[in-house]
Length: 198
Image 1 (cartoon, one colour):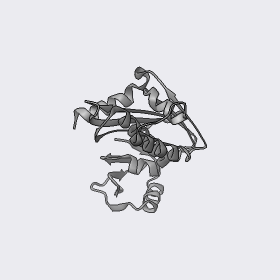
Image 2 (cartoon, one colour):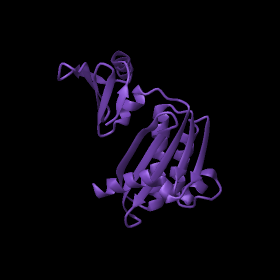
Image 3 (cartoon, helix red, strand yellow):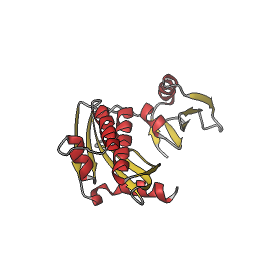
Image 4 (tube, one colour):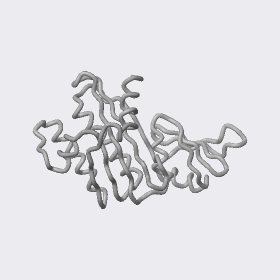
């Protein structure tokens, strides 16, 4: 449950511009409540508490960003193809973990799940307005295909690579690096937790 230190009136203005709906607070301490997408926000005197299935819908609107972000992604498939999930984490050098997520994505191969995880973390970074992104994942295949070192013969993967490249154009600078699984542990945990809880 993210907690954002901010002026509640500024937060309300930003959420209004984004199309949020508002209600009165439920207690004397709550200034207001808002709903945007799959998230809700509760404002207090100097902070906003974000809840819901997809907190990113609100936190991306309220947090000031830009600059560089580190992105970790992992896709998991049990059965290959089989039930699949994604896990991802955005880490800002100044703020630590900015956002993270883990979701099931139906049945697909592990490589397709890896692409879906990469797309999820890139979409989150775009939503936050970061200018530069350093991407890390434990799939060498994805890293090499995205940089063009390896070809993509599978039509489904080729389509996902096109989407990745479209998202990468949103950044002034980007890099993608293959890292060992232990470096990517949080994203891996989030993907597996999503599958365990499905």
